[in-house]
Length: 146
Image (cartoon, rainbow, N blue to C red; front, side, top):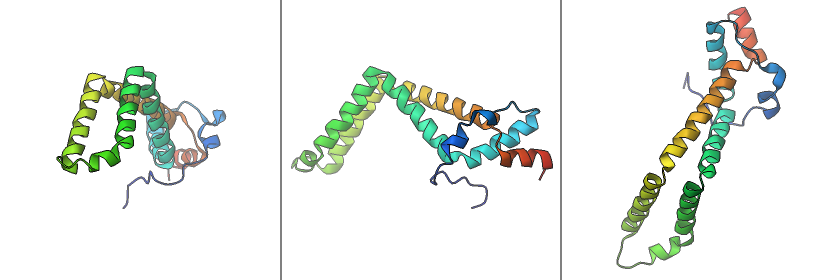
């Protein structure tokens, strides 16, 4: 499909992604927009990894949220075999109950707020990188206009 970004491909070189001499303030707004668009296309897998890392770090930085989410996931994984053997309840009912418990944990521990803060942090980091990173491909597009 034209105009889509393939996120599930091999990420670009992390050395190139973090190379300090390739960061430069854009001269004009139009150059920043072109640079951001091209970098978002080229570094999409890197930005997905960076954004996921920000969400993970903010989630794990809140001990209550981390223990609640990791504990419930571990409990469900450890007892998955036991749930299938419960004769009185269907598998759908058991998974619905587990989903309701997970939703309560998310609501009562403010996990949603913490994860949204992680998403905001990740989006800010990726956006700043996309605008400030001056790759050779983007530099040619800006200078030649093609």
